[in-house]
Length: 374
Ligand SMILES: Nc1ncnc2c1ncn2[C@@H]1O[C@H](COP(=O)(O)OP(=O)(O)OP(=O)(O)O)[C@@H](O)[C@H]1O
Image (cartoon, rainbow, N blue to C red):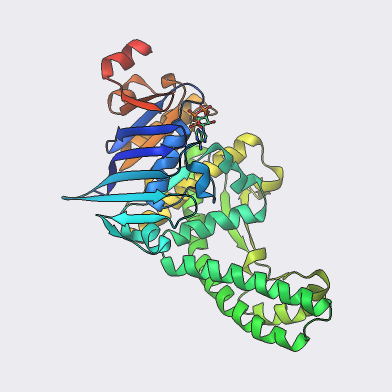
């Protein structure tokens, strides 16, 4: 069996002063009224598994208001072994990541393997991966690949820095402060890092398309769904395209070709869901992309990632809710939040662990109290 989270402890995490949740393999349902802390608990699980929040790049945001630090600890069950991992952060200091008490210096290494378990998250805002800007789709793809390879995460960070520096240089050339000859050096650096990104993304595009197609036909229907990578320049033409764009790039002060300008095209029966999808189609396609990410991680690592899905049932019809509930039950571990237990069949709830959230405190709900609340 793949690794899973056995317990998580939150200290000063958003609206939690101090709380512990025990989790099971299979389905865990977090139930509570609005604004009690369901989303925050899922975020805390992602925070301790990946070393950072999928909801914000700013760690200070997750520190409980009025407190000076945040800490999330987890016990990871991995076969016979148990691993203790923790993420601690005090604004102004470096984030502390530990595995069995030993510090892990690199966030990329912590996130891509040291913990021994990965997470695929779904938050309602994630619909932007389908509906939003190309940057949202690139971030989805880069986060997925970074969760598998620290070297890819480093290449993404270095490429982004190199583009910023090249853009600064373009503006200096435009303003007559630097010579155009210096561009060649930056072009070489940018192309070298950019090709690393393109290679990673190209290798992922085919399998993701396949997994996405399968997830869409299970969730949506038999129509043909696909996801494909759309280049601003192919790897073969990249260096040449960058050179050809010198004049225009200097004028605008930005780099117009390269992986930071690429996109993913998400199609259903040939129709672009980003531009023409209904809200429901975009939401289902977002979910299908998350299942595609799960399958991609599973194939790449041989391990099932844990699914952390926020309020995923509310906008689905009964048939799709039942299908999803079965997927969650069969997962190594799924933690799903809801305001309403009626979204789950009694037979499903009997096989699930249920956690009740109220005002930032967590209680394990017994089966009989679940039956009575229905
Ligand atoms: N840094 C923070 N410190 C303290 N409280 C916070 C912090 N960040 C968010 N909160 C509060 O945490 C509360 C719970 O938020 P959360 O999003 O987890 O609710 P929820 O149970 O998922 O609700 P809903 O069903 O409405 O989505 C909110 O009232 C929010 O304002």
